[in-house]
Every structure is written in C-alpha cells, then in structure tokens.
Image 1 (cartoon, one colour):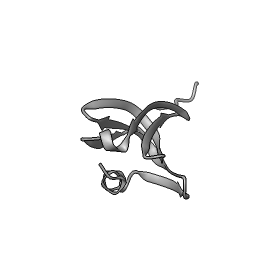
Image 2 (spheres, rainbow, N blue to C red):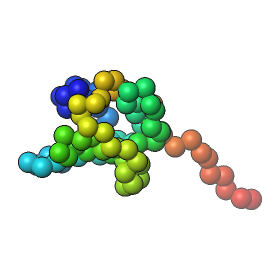
Image 3 (cartoon, helix red, strand yellow):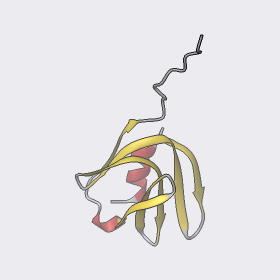
Length: 91
C-alpha cells in the first residue's frame, strides 16, 4: 500500500503533520482505532513513516511497526477525543 492511500484514510483525522526527507509524522486530532491487515490497534494518536515502514503510536510509545509493502488493508475508525464525564459541585 502507498502512503498516499493511507493519507486518504487519515484525511480529516490529522491535527498536525511533520514531513522531511527521512520521515513523515502525523499527530492525530484525538485517539482512533486503526486496523492494519485485519488487526485492530486501539487508541492510536500518532503515525509515522520512516524507511518505508509505518509506525503507530499510543501516547508517545511505539506499539507496532510494519513495512509499507506488507500492508494490504488499512482503515481508521472511531474518535475518543470527546470527553464523557461530568463534574458536580459539592453542597
């Protein structure tokens, strides 16, 4: 799979990207589930490509790396960035 294909899936999810000659990094707007070759990785917030390898991160820790040539299926789903809690004042 080509990076252009993956960038198509990431469109709308990217908060900030850094691109130079050696590496491309994508900081996502929140936390997402990412599926690569039918394996789902939960709560991902950053992806990078270096030396034709895709690296996925959760809170600055790399959790998976794969060669771009070995990616047959990729999708990104779900957004965890919306907090779902309430704070109540004490009386």
